Image (tube, rainbow, N blue to C red; front, side, top):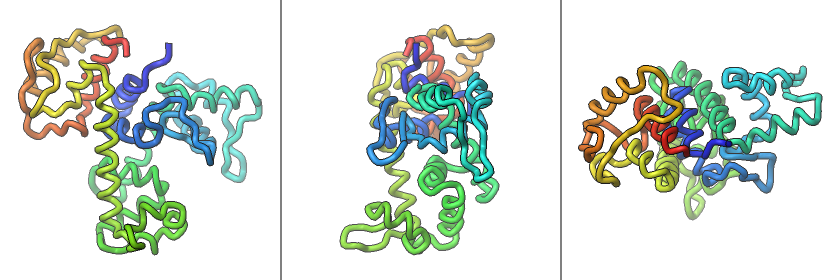
Length: 283
């Protein structure tokens, strides 16, 4: 049985270390959390709206790491840099994986991880979810240019730096009345968009899962009793007790406030906790 989008995203976060809140927000923005979503004007398909070339590229690079070696092995890259699959049936099957929540989430997370490593090498700091979304929006080269210029001159107009992107996305690059938005304005708008996307998607989470990303100042459920599911591995129970203690939670009791824990930017520990909860819930 195919994974639900929420459990697939939690697994992808656990496997790659990419922020769960970022992946959740991106999926909400791109597809409204709909695995079968298809764009009207391009080949973009699935939870993360991969176009064909982007999908073939990331699948070639990372598919084998997640049990999809059969797909990676059939993808070739031509001298012009474009990816292709010679067998039409295999090509259809590989592109069809974009509508599988697990495959799409894993490849989106791996793509984000590749971008994260490259951005951090340039920025000299940890990449945020908004940094990663800039790479998704502008490509890695465009994101590096955007972020480096924003560090130096945050008030600079973005439209002059990215004229093609500005023409295609005027509502992003220009405010009402045609005023060009600055680099920092666009960055802040994307940050808010990701947060709202994560919050919207979080409302549809199974009740137990909501704890892992819920506002710790105002928990939505009266008590937590975590039971490890079928995906739990040896040592998970001891790890779980330690993690719950760090989050100021005792099994079966109402969670308390935890300073420094951001509800929509979970740590790898809370992403793993979320995954174990979902495994138990069968989501």
